[in-house]
Every structure is written in structure tokens, then in C-alpha cells.
Amino acid sequence: DAGVIQSPRHEVTEMGQEVTLRCKPISGHDYLFWYRQTMMRGLELLIYFNNNVPIDDSGMPEDRFSAKMPNASFSTLKIQPSEPRDSAVYFCASRLTISYNEQFFGPGTRLTVL
Amino acid sequence: GEDVEQSLFLSVREGDSSVINCTYTDSSSTYLYWYKQEPGAGLQLLTYIFSNMDMKQDQRLTVLLNKKDKHLSLRIADTQTGDSAIYFCAESRGSYIPTFGRGTSLIVHP
Image 1: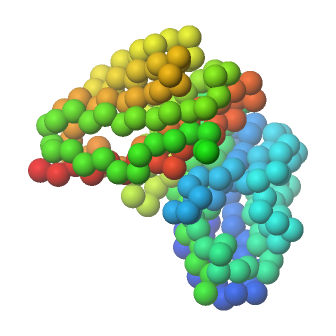
Image 2 (image 1 turned 60 degrees about the vertical axis):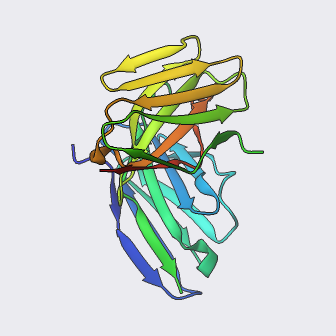
Image 3 (image 1 turned 180 degrees about the vertical axis):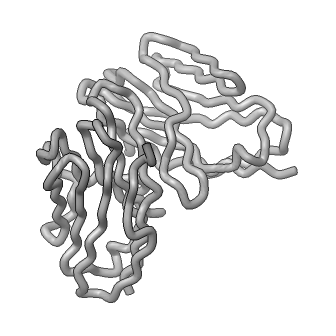
């Protein structure tokens, strides 16, 4: 398996634009997580899905952020409208089952909002 | 305060041992983890320990858990330049969802 795949790897956009980040989890993994990493706040869990259903979105910073998982092999994180404070590295991770201890992280998307 | 705390930086000489420390607040933590993040990459699980253990060894890595003091450490023996990375401590409870510390940047110099 190729591991967790994220695209794009880098995104530069202007304030107010819509940004869509994409993730393909490892095949067969039931859980998918979206994280945001910044120097100020470290690694924050934004939302996670179980079998394509959002379970906990309490980490989503505000209504400008939304995430979907239309099928087991694809998820998106959308920011609309984007703001400079959204600049961060966004990671997707997947996990086989909740009791399986390892989370597999993608390489991340570095987002810069000008 | 934060749930999981780590110092931000550690600098060691190649060949020395590195010890990265972490404290956590929740005594009901069931699993404690160490993840490694290399530049430009995602986090990768290095090792984890169940809360009823006090030590785990895996080749050059030794994890020590002091549950009374809620203190976790990762010792890397014979540290190499390839060990330079950010090391994240994390803990999980009944939900199994890990809470991560901010990470410790390990710098290994010749």
C-alpha cells in the first residue's frame, strides 16, 4: 500500500479564497483523522470519521471549516473563506480500528494564506 | 496547562544517548506513545507502552513510564544524525484517540 496520500502537498492562496485539501486513507482502515499543525498550537485534532461518518468535529475551529468523507477511500477538508491565520500544515491520518494503536499519517499539506 | 507537555528542544552529540521527557496530566491514560516526525513528513509511530508497564525496550529505544509522577521518557542509545527529528509524546484514554504534546526537536551534531 502507498500509505496515506494527501494532495496538494503545498497550497498558496489569497485570503478569501476557498481551499480544498484531499486525503486518501490506507485501504481497509475504518478511521480517518484530520489534524492541523502550527508552531503556536502544536498538533490539533480537527475531526475524525468512522466508516465515513463524522464522529467528533469539536476541534473544527469555526464554520469556515468543513470536512466530508463521501466514501471509504476519499476525504476532503474545505476552508471557505480562507484567512491568513489558517496557514498551517494539515495532516490526514488513518487507522485500522479504534483499538489498533498505530495511526498512519500522510505527508501533510502546507497551506499558506496570503 | 496542557494535557501533555514536553520541552521544545534537545541537542546531543552523535554517539551519545538522548533522553526526551514528557509529562501528562490524566492518571486514567491507558496508552502512551512516542511518534517521530522527520522534516517534510507526517508522524510515524516509534513505540507505545501500556499504562501497567513501566519499561519497554526496542533495539536502541527505551521507554520508561513513571505512572505515579505521570512522567514518560524516551531514551535513544548511540544517537545518530538520522535520529534528528521532532519527537511527539501522546497519551490516550478510553476513546483510544491520542492527545499529542507539542513535540521535542532533537538536534544531533557531529
